Length: 366
Image (cartoon, rainbow, N blue to C red; front, side, top):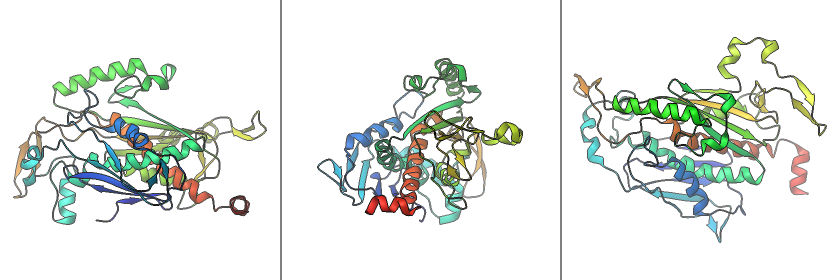
């Protein structure tokens, strides 16, 4: 199977299945001398692990990370960093029935058609649990960004019909509620909405927004390697994501040029600034120094216990009710995955940009 490696200079290769012995990642291209411990990575994995709230799957996993290589005496050595998380609470018997049919909204059918075989235990490689490797690698990327003064804030802006209000926007609040919403009132309304869906054996979709501050100008290239395009690929590679936008996104299609263009000005420090940020931090596929703002639309969890129509491998139409332990909402746990994929993309772009100008190379080597 191809396609498990992401990045050009700073790259990750993820491995493992939902109900296999373990999952993990190999991070290549990390510079030597970065302070790194298992606790640094664990802090990110704890944000995505199951069983962390009433709106997450009750599967109980510690998701304890083990760093197997690439770190010595608390610092990276410049060699590949291998990390592993062992699976413990995998109830494969919960999935034995689905071996003979295709779950609506899942990769069962397409995986079978492509390979002629599939690991039906929790979706195998197509499971959301695959994101463990992404998040572990993203934790390292985020630490590199922090060393450069670049910060990422990621949160949920909508769940089903409930959206946050900008006049109540509070980043600290997103850390205080289990839905990662920066609006206390909206979080309470969304929780009530999810409770009603749980009773109906149903699920909800949601939107995750990511804001990056401190990003320098000049990241990305103007044709196929646009920063926007790289981020879109990264975010769309997350299994449950069905939509991506940057800046005003789809709203720009309903605007005029006079409304959508960002006027330039001179800031207090004498540097060029944008007076607005409709473009979301990029122009022509290149970062412009403004906050980078992107959004990902997550579909509802496809594993629901209410009756659904499908077909089995014998070509018969059947009705199923999916058993097992599943999230009624993906978006809340998807926050850290979006953050990880954004961090990985930005670090790769930063490293590529180091060779864009001769004066930059001279600073490095003279």
